[in-house]
Every structure is written in structure tokens, then in C-alpha cells.
Length: 256
Image (cartoon, rainbow, N blue to C red; front, side, top):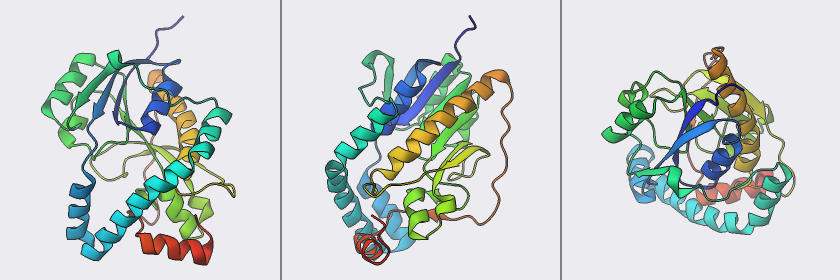
């Protein structure tokens, strides 16, 4: 029986990381899970205020707070989707976790060199530095909740629906570079939301598809047949909607 591929999971703490871990561990040897501390929402919004304006940033804050309530309301739907696809969001065993303040800390690069993985699976981290990406001779592979390059940034599935662009409502598995979801594309597929789906369940539908493609991509790494393709077509980076914008779109277009 061939040896299982050595994988490091470099991620933010959350449901999608737990699902990713359990969805990969049976086939791949996840030698360590490096979890970075979640960046401060207020620091993120301070940056957004400088880039997009204070009114936009405050509107996004309102929506972020509302989306947490929506997530609790949608918990049964999320659990049903996970059960339907045989996925688990159980806690990751503590013994395989290393916690860090940021994935870009100097110690993370050193740790990756010690672990010598065949691939680094990235999930929900901040933008990774060029120095970190060059730390090991292994691909960094990410699952992006949107079809790139048209829907880079956050919540690509939602924005595709807002734009009545269902042919770009999906998920991308891609190599990570120093840009925002600009790395070479490995696999993409679309999702089909149902009537009881909403902003907080679209990412679960995307995760189901993305996890399947991540397994394929990691098999490609082991077999030496990784074949990324360049992004083509219009490109845009998206952010959170504002609370007012979300409700206006929901009322006018029915996008929840």
C-alpha cells in the first residue's frame, strides 16, 4: 500500500476548516494543522474605511453582525447539508493543532520547513506573504468560495447571484500566490442553491464541491500531474455587502 501524502492544513479556525480536516484526513496524512488567530473585524473594517469610505465600512459592519444572526437561524439547514454529504464539523484533535497569531509569522515558515509537506492546504487565512509561500518546495492550494477571476475576494457565490450571473456561481480550487485569489486555477464547478438557502448556506454548498476538488488536486500533487491554468476574463475583488444593500437586493431580486 503506498504511503499517504503528507499534508499541512494552514487555516483560520472555523466550521469550514473543521469540515476540510475531516474530509481529507482519511485519504491524506495531515501531519499538522496550523491555526491562525482570527483577524480583528474592526481592524479589517478600519482598512476598508480607508479604501472604500467610512459609510461603506459601517454598512458592512452592520451586515456582518446581521449575518451572525442569520447563521444561527440557518443552523438546521447547514447541519442537514453536512449530513447529506457525509461531512463532519467535529472539533479537530488538539494534538495535531499548532496555534499562531498569523500565518505570516516567521515561525510558521520554519515549521513548514521542518514538516516538509508535499502540499499545504490553505483555508480561511489572511493573504499569505511571498516569503511564506517560498518557505517550502510544495504547492499551497486553496478553496475559494467563488469563480475566479470574476469573483475574487469574499462571498463570490452571493455576488454572482446578485448579478444574475449563475454561470459564475460556484467554487474554485487554485494555487495560492501573493495576490487576492489570483493564483493558477486547478478546478472549478458551479452550485445550485435551493429555496431554503441563503448567504450563510451558499458557502456550505461551495465547500461540498470544493472539498471534492481539493481531494483531486492533492492526488494530482502526489502523481506529479498538477496543471494550473491562468485566470482569464474580467476580474474583480468583492467585499461584504452593506446591511442596506443586502436588504435592498433581497427585496428587489429575491437573493437571500
